[in-house]
Length: 139
Ligand code: IDP
Ligand code: MG
Image (cartoon, rainbow, N blue to C red):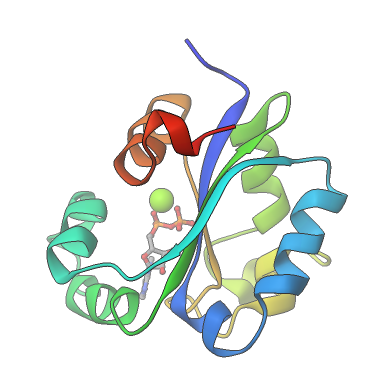
């Protein structure tokens, strides 16, 4: 099982606000190597599928509309203990609760528009990365 990779999305708010460069700088400065990256726009079906686990939550429709609002940047990152370390780097889901210096503390606006996604397990990192990238797009 691959344990040294995670998957991230820089969400539409990050692209809209011109924060892609500064966020990538934080990610690489923290020791993550970018092994795949591109800008895409999710369809509604993509967004519903990606967040299917939240389909019964009251915020689901708003979340889907937010995620399709504009382009996102998707990437696969490599580092020892990638999943856990990246979740620590991005901080709590709600930026108001995120630790100082974390990406969400620095760049997120609200609990919904929270700048970045990070996979929550090795298994999901592999599923999410494979959804966006073919073998010849991963280095
Ligand atoms: P995570 O992104 O930190 O893993 P999850 O609980 O998996 O957080 O939620 C997925 C995404 O759904 C969050 O990143 C955020 O964009 C949105 N979200 C989560 N909880 C809420 C909420 O209570 N209100 C509005 N949006 C939420
Ligand atoms: Mg999650």
